[in-house]
Image 1 (cartoon, rainbow, N blue to C red):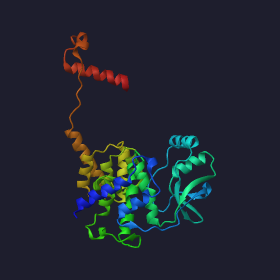
Image 2 (image 1 turned 135 degrees about the horizontal axis):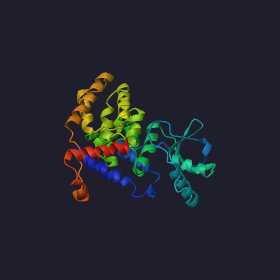
Image 3 (image 1 turned 90 degrees about the horizontal axis):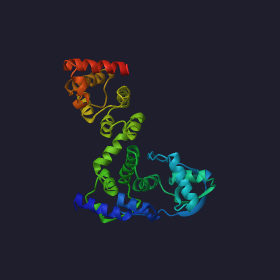
Image 4 (image 1 turned 90 degrees about the vertical axis):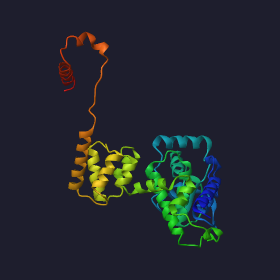
Length: 329
């Protein structure tokens, strides 16, 4: 079976798992996603149960950096109001950890219930290993949440790719299937097929997680072009800090074309401040030299009574410049 055929099959399986509406998610959705992403049939670990858990015994997910940011204050309050009116429609998911429980899915629901003064919350409890925990913590958010930031997608995809690579080294979690005799997709291809995106999209989003925090925040806030951010991510931390300082002085004005020229003149991973500054200044100077001067046009009918009193275009230009200086100096 060719890779395109496998990819098509994987997409069909993913579509069968992915719910049309959030309320349609079943308890086994993450199990099915796990099997789709990693092949074979998951051997149940057992011990799954539902219980009312004390909120003060819950801790945030810390097994891996999966990047999802908490709701804003307004969105959290809206969620709390909805829970107060309609109840908690879906239990959170946790695993036992260090005499308490690690939240795998439902951080915002927990925060909303805290706002409401709840002491307990319904939870699906299952003892799972770190890899399985990462899948539970990422898949639902990637499927459900709208408007994810580039960094949120990037960290989640990166965590899933690490799990996928790890699972390729073990066979104790799955029953043997014929999939093992078929050509294998790469980790990136497998994750891309499941979520209905292109492998290049996965690569791009994961790549920006190698940016220093200030630059990654700038990408999320759309001050720094995503493609420029990807290119800068290939430089080491010291060089990225040089980019950061320069971008601050230029009010974050950096085009893809300029970034590509900088990369060509100063290949990653490391560039000194002197070399980067010289190359950047040269590119800026050339761009200004070849830029088209801005022209100003007026409706001559509006100015007709005055133009007859002006002897030349030069006099008109001088008068206009004099006015601007008086107005804005």
